[in-house]
Structure formats: C-alpha cells, structure tokens
Length: 128
Ligand code: FES
Image (cartoon, rainbow, N blue to C red; front, side, top):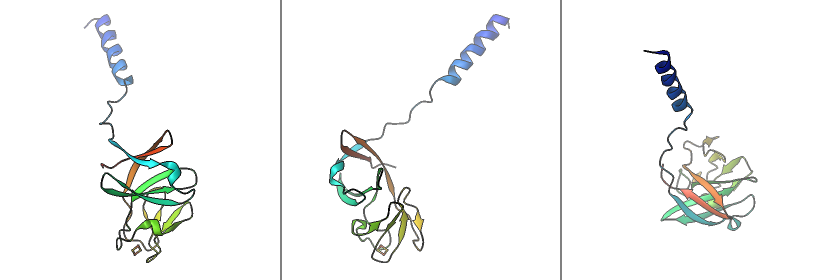
C-alpha cells in the first residue's frame, strides 16, 4: 500500500469518526397545552392522546410523569411538591421531582415522559 493510499484511508477514517452519530427516530411530540395552565411551582393533570399526564412546574422547569400514584392510583395532582420531592398525600409515598425515582417509603417510582416547551406550549413524547 502506498503512502498516498494510506493517507487517504486515514483521512476517510478521521472524517467518519467526526461525523455526528446517526440520530434515532425523532420523538413523536404530542401537544399538552399552554404552559401557563400549570400553576407556578404547582402541578396539573392533562389528558394527552388518551393518556393522563401530570405536568409539574418545579420552580425553574417543567417535567412530566404518569398522572396516577403507583401505590393505589390516586391522582398525584392532589399531592404536593416542594421543588425537590413530590408527595402523594394519600399514604405519603414520595418521588424525586426531577426523575420520578422513589423516595422514602415509596416502593415504586413514577414513569416520566420527555417534555419540551415551544412557543409557550408544552409537548410530551409518550413512547418509551
Ligand atoms: S395512593 Fe399514593 S401513596 Fe398511596
């Protein structure tokens, strides 16, 4: 193999290594509603394509979770959060407000959904 061929192979390899990774399928965003409908530092349940989704305003961001408590399917909208922990008031299961992970006595976490805000509207991706 000539020096020129070797240089060409190296150049092609370097170019491929710098190419952006192929993107996965784009999420199918579903409109939730106006962000303004979610109380500041509060929570609101929405029906999105037949799925009930809890939108939480954490103080500086919005996050989306399953709407019902995994313990006994009580609406989490009736609970409270302090900006870091969401508490279901029925039996006090708690969840990390950023990730939905169980805290304290909770035996299960919350399913979370990807969320984006665009032009004052909230969108979630319901697929895994
Ligand atoms: S129903 Fe939520 S903690 Fe029991």
